[in-house]
Amino acid sequence: MRQGLDISELEASTKIRAKYLRALENDEFSMLPGSTYVKSFLRTYAEHLGLDAQLLVEEYRAQHEPRGEGEVQAYVPPARRERERGGGGGGPAFGPGTLLAFGVVLLLIIFAVIGLASSNNKKHHKAATAAKHKQHRARQQARPAPPPAPTTVSLKIVPSESTYVCLDDGSGNKISEAIITSPQTYKAKRIRLNMGRSSAQLIVDGKNYNFTRSASAVGFDFSPGGKSKVLPPGQRPCGG
Image (cartoon, rainbow, N blue to C red; front, side):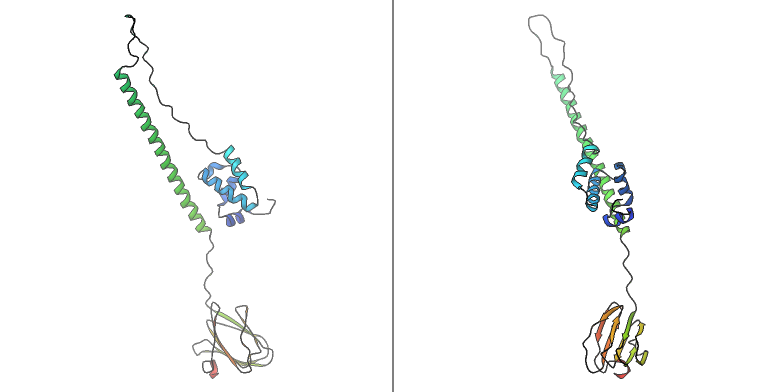
C-alpha cells in the first residue's frame, strides 16, 4: 500500500495468483498448496517489494510451519513378574515363547512405521505435483496473447520541394501518380515507390526510413512487418 501497488499489478509481475498474495498478506497459509510453496511465494513477494525475504521466511518457519511427527516408540511387552519360589533359585525371567512374541510385535511395529511413512510421502508427492500443474496453468493463462502480425504497410512522404511520386501495390495496380508539395500518406498490403527526388523524408509504419540520397530518382519496395528493399531502375512502378 505504501508503494501504491495494486494486487493485479503484483500478480502480473510476480506470476503469483492474486488469491495466494492475499493469503500471504492475511497469514492464511492453509490456502496455499504447502509449506514449500509458502516459503517460495514469501521470498518472491518480499524481494519484489524490497523487504527482507530471509527474515520473513524464518518468521514463518518459527510461527507457522508444521512440526514433524515424533518418533514412534517401540512397544515392549511387560516382564513376567512371576518367579518360582523355593529351592533357593529363580527361574528365567523370559521363556522362549515370550521372546518370540516380542520379536513378532517389534517386526509388526517396524512394518507399520515404514508403511505410514511411505503413504505420507506419496500423498505429499501427489499434492506437490497437483500444485505445480495448477501453477503452470495459471502462468499460461496470465501470459498476454501476442499481437497479431501486421497485414498492411503505411508510408508517409514528406517532400522538401515539389517531388514526383508513383506508387503501386506490387501487382501492377497503381495506387497514385502525382507531383506532391505537401506530406502525403498511403496505406496498402504492399507499396512499391518510384520517387523523382531523394530529398523527401520517408516514414514507414511511424518510423523514419533512412536511405542513401542521390541526385537521381530512387525506388523502394515496402512490405508489412518492416520489410523493405531498394528497387533498381526497370523494376520501379510507372516505368521508372
